[in-house]
Image (cartoon, rainbow, N blue to C red; front, top):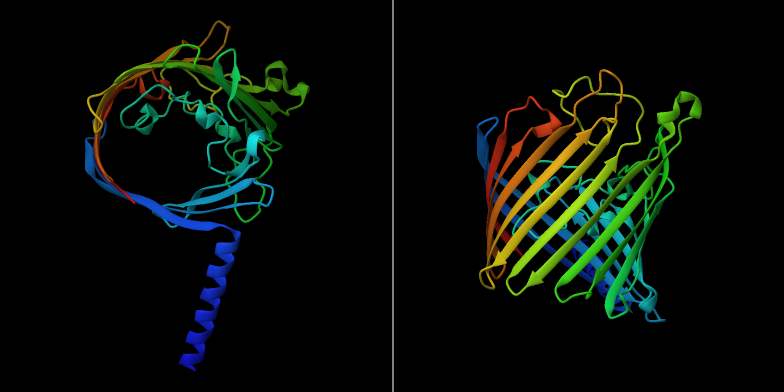
Length: 356
C-alpha cells in the first residue's frame, strides 16, 4: 500500500512539474526581521520578530503578453497581500488584488528615506492617500512614453465598492452605508531636468447618503498628493504635500484636545513633508525627515474647533551586506493623534533583516 502511495505521489509531482513548465514558472522568496524597539510614551521596550513568504507565479501567453500572480503570507499564516497582473506589451498593465496598494501606493510618502516611512511609527494622512482603493479595485498602469524629452507614465484606479474590505476566494467586500464607488488617477514625470521626478495623484470616493441628511453629508471624500524628488550623485531631497477630505458630515470631535482618526473624523487633514537622504557608499545610507500634518475641522460656528498640527521628525540609518541589513531610526512626534493636549512622544527601533 505504501508503494502504491509513493507511486501516486510521484506521478502527481511529475504532472505538476510538467504543468508548471508549460504554463510558466513558480518562485518562493521571503524575509525575516528581528527588531529592538522602545517607545517613550509607555516606556515599553522589547524584541520583536516578523517573517513572511511571497509565493509567485509568472508566464507568457501566445501573443507575447505576460502575467504575474503573487501572494504574501505573513507571520500569522494569513494572506495579507495578493495581486494578479496582466502586462499587455506596449499597452500597459492591469492589476487586481487585495492589499497590494492600488494606484495610490506609488504616490504616498514618496520623499526619500533610508529605512521606513514615518507612518511606520506614527500614522499620518499622507500614508492614507488612496487607501480606500487598495482592495476590490481594478488598476491600470501605463507604459512610460516620451513627451517633449521627458518620460511620462500614468495610473488609473476604479472600484465599484470602495469600502477597502479585504476579501479572499472570490468574495466581495460589504457595501458601505455611506460610500459607493471610487476612482483615482496619477501621473509620474521624470527627465524634465536630470535627477528630477514629479508625481501627482488624486481620487474620489462617492458619498451615497441622501441630500435630506444635510448639505455636508453628500460631499464626496477626496484624497490627493503631489511630490518632487531630486537626486544629484549620492544626495536625494524630496518635498510632498497631501490633502485628505473625509467627506463626512458634522463635527464628530468635541474639542481640539481630543484624538482624531483620519477617515473617521469630519474635516480635512493636510500634510507637508521634507527629507534629505545621503548614500555614504553602496552599503551605507542616512536620512532625515520632517513632517507636519494639520487637522482642520472646517467648522465655522462660534464653538469652532481649533486646528491642530502634529509633527514628526525622523533620523534613519541603513547598512546592507548582501542579503543582510542593519537599519535603525529615531522618530519623535508632537501632538500625537492630532490632540493638542497630548504629550510629545518618540520611538526608537533597530532592525536586523535577512532576505532570501
